[in-house]
Amino acid sequence: MPLRNDDVRFISSPLKIPPFRPEPPVPFFAQTLTKSKNSLSHLIYSLNESTRSTEPFTRKLQSFAEHLYGKSVRICSTCLSMTGAVDTLVNFPLLCSASLSLNQSSAEFPAQSELSTQLQQKAQQPHSVSRSDEERVLISEVLVRNKDGEELERKDLETEALTALKACRANSALTVREVQEDVHRIIDSGYFCSCMPVAVDTRDGIRLVFQVEPNQEFHGLVCEGANVLPTKFVEDAFRDGYGKVVNIRRLDEVITSINGWYMERGLFGMVSGVEILSGGIIRLQVAEAEVNNISIRFLDRKTGEPTKGKTRPETILRQLTTKKGQVYSMLQGKRDVETVLTMGIMEDVSIIPQPAGDTGKVDLIMNVVERPSGGFSAGGGISSGITSGPLSGLIGSFAYSHRNVFGRNQKLNISLERGQIDSIFRINYTDPWIEGDDKRTSRTIMVQNSRTPGTHVHGNQPDNSSLTIGRVTAGMEFSRPIRPKWSGTVGLIFQHSGARDEKGNPIIKDFYSSPLTASGKTNDEMLIAKFESVYTGSGDQGSSMFVFNMEQGLPVWPEWLFFNRVNARARKGVEIGPARLLLSR
Image (tube, rainbow, N blue to C red; front, side):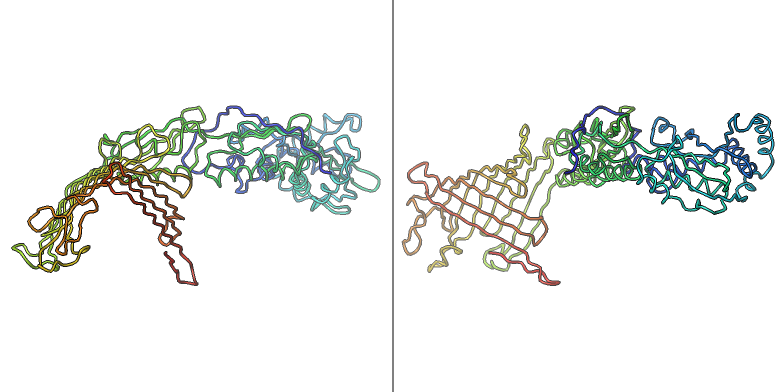
């Protein structure tokens, strides 16, 4: 039965993170590595490489190379002093490496002081390091022991260390550089926090012992600052390592996977620190950049300079799904940009994140360029279907539209179309999002007066007289999203209709004395309750769609029409090889 991870606990606390830049978040270790790979082992390697050029380390290598022959020497490791770009990692207990130095006890070598003076003088000779690196020493035996020189309790760790060795083998001639490189390889295996190579002169030759200190066993996890990172994701990432020796390479993979989780979702978050506490508790610090403030900046269409906008900022801000206090997501910001563009009143929209001082948060500035809000249009033409009268077939139209009434993204459209017989006058007023509503409910008010030829319904009259049908319609509709891909619409529509002759007089019967109105009066009135539900798939042309529509006549007065009408239609796109078949019913 696998061990239960009962010691895992998660807490959240505020953290300061580095000043934010608009580029995608860079993983924590990638900011400190001089190598291209995001790996703790490469960090250790790069730090050791940098120490090789320092004068104290050069002296140690020179001393070791010149006095390794015929003397019992002790080579111990020293922890690196991290400076420059890695100052922030000084207290990180995992980042321990090894370097070579020469220590000789007074009991074994009485003339230690004199010998050390001579070594220092020789170390100052030019090109001493390059000569010592090339000189070889015959090694008769290679062992792996703990820091006290005893055998390791866990043979699997000894095997890991021996497997990591490449150059150091029994009965092989080695240089100082080769020994140092194998020290790096042991550390790079990820199981050890320190490695001290010790050379001992025996009767059989020089014995090289790598004294290693294994990492602690993993017994618990403390994760701080992870507000949006799922607990289960972190638990699953560390579950396999519970009760085992902490492997730095494996820990680096876990950190990379956590940073990858943020990057896949476009979130500004990353692992900012890792520490192994006493008792095998791993402390994981996560930095998440929360949104501190969102502001709107209007830019001039021609110059691109900041200007005063016509749209109210709150009208734009309520369209955004990104809110203050949330961890900023680039994907969410992209969707917000698209949402603002679909309002139809903006020509260009972009979001620029900026650091909010030293708070570890970000301020979002949305740059918008407004479109012209409205204008007039007119047109005309000739219809070949009408050939009688002084203005035979002449058609004219006039329209006025305003897409941003009161700076609230409200739409107003007024249009007039007039022909020799038919005409239509329409007023539409739409509020895409009613103020104070949190369900994105829209409201549309419509008034229309139309006159159409009656021949489409009643046919041509035997006496060649013309018949027109006039309708006055007014209504109000409310629409809102019901669930993803579903929307609903309800409304009330009043209609007043009647027939007129060519002189404009109302008539109730045609040439054959058939009634033209249902009520028997000159006009019919009706009040219609409307309900409509629409499903849209991906929204692309040819995607699935389903529309259900129902209208119910309400007999408020006895002479008003009472009826019920139900309509449904569906559309489905099917791909057949390179072709796409669109089915509609």
